[in-house]
Image (cartoon, rainbow, N blue to C red):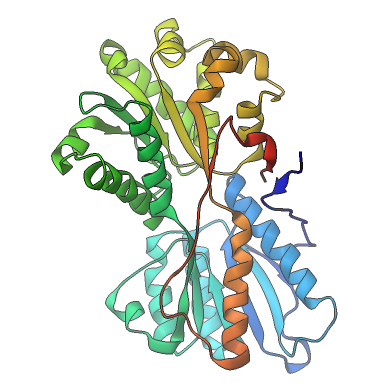
Length: 363
């Protein structure tokens, strides 16, 4: 059967900008050219790493034929303060800027975005969208927001849970990503489905959910938080039949935690025999391998899941890192003819499970 490739990434040559927590790929406005700056995150986990690779590959392709009358540079950052400092530096040389595409590391980058607005630097926000009165009233300076359907991820997850038998008396474990707009929207979508489609009250939703601390999209942190949850909730584990993680890395962290000798037998039995559905998102190929049944550690994971039938409890809602190319295209359209977005450009999601995982390839 023909496979649909969710993304294909090639890593371009990357050079280091010393002592800033930043790396850059591309030129520097050679020959007096203006520069379109694409600011994304470093590869702190699979999805952001894939975004950086997609951005580098796409920029390399755009520059190949030499027809652009401006340069494009991809700059990655592993620290919010470094990203803020870079934006502030860009503003001091705004006459050399064609525009900015930025994936804000978190909401602390808000003052830097305000600085772009106040200096009339055109920019596109990607994925993590910061709102405030200054940014929202920016007019043409804010070209637009391009993001995946974070609300849809939560909405689809709740739908699958309800269709699989979620009851108001059940408990739901939620493992969020970070403190940006992304988890807020995913949780809001989850609650909206339960309230709007399943007839729950907001109080019933709050009562059913136990949320861990943020995982920062880290597999290791997810392992620790999941271990802590099992240890502190052993007496009531049987009430928790549903797990909503905000990323494939988090769900894989759960599997790795369960597979460790330090995990209690009660925890392993609960996950195998009581948990009905585990939802994640992003489209990581390693998660698809587990669902498909061809992961390198599949024998151990099948023992935790309950064999081939146990894989049916796993599903992943897509969140394509390749949509960074749409954000770059949006800024390029603005540079070409002043086009701005009248509303957010939201990339739709799809659900991947045992029924269709053979037809896709993740990142």
